[in-house]
Length: 394
Ligand code: PMP
Image 1: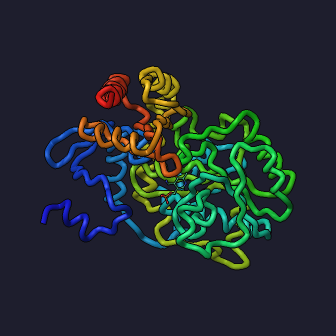
Image 2: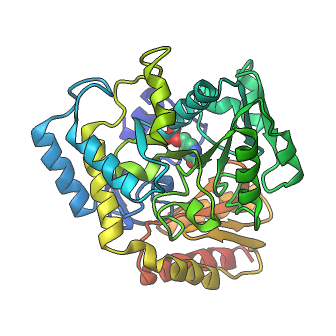
């Protein structure tokens, strides 16, 4: 059997039509398949490889940690240097109130932990989220996903959850003194890059503060420099009570985290003790890789170029078949009339050596979330191919 056949036969599948590229190497903004064909990567593993694939500093940090230790004990018992140093670095670049990092192995687990922490801290049960939000696929995270289509087959899910409309000021009145937390993506990603309206996040923050409700901002996809600041919330003048991190946090290794004030986080330590535990959270190799990636983001000043690169994409992505381009930093959604057109574009681009994807709740939109250091030349090549493909449809 070929590798492709083995993949389809023995690896658990998530759709009837996986992309099935047989990638054997990746570096910077490029990937190569088994036949030696090169692909420009316009999605960076869906906002994971923010500093590009296999940055030398990340690879070196991984090798160094591998020579010291791999897993040594479940999360939270031993002083593991990579966890400690990374938590110190992250909190140095977060507002003072976000000073305790709880590590997980994935974004979904960060969502789960944050929901539990909010219930435990407030003694309340209601959790509010937003339509077209995505916070993970585990049962708790699925319970607050903003889509009946993905929820219906898995009911019953968590009780006492409510969905509001993102960017809607009136709906904020649903937040009351029985709401434990509101979970929101600072910029809704899978909705097709939906940016908060002027003043809306601030109104949400204020309503939560007024009701004693914790505000949980999910920056699993939009954080880690992607929008031109370390964290997207910095651009809206708000600070969450709990911040969710994942994806790029591990520099290409699996890592998630939720971050809060220490006095909130400490509620996991009593009544009951071990209120939230896991085995692999903050794996030392992932923390070493993530810290190296964070330092690259800093030292190579990758966030400085993002607004210009966003503008470059926007100026090049003009075509009669493109109905709209929505963007916030290097999170870009290129909208077509339908999923059918979008899928045709995606498939044709793969043939042309450009790797893209669609969005969960915006299937008609092409996803562009490249490595933050993709060169202007590569952006021009990628956009040129997108336009060529669209021209070929006329
Ligand atoms: N929140 C957001 C905004 C995400 O984009 C994702 C992953 N797509 C998650 C949570 C869940 O992360 P993971 O897939 O690592 O569990």
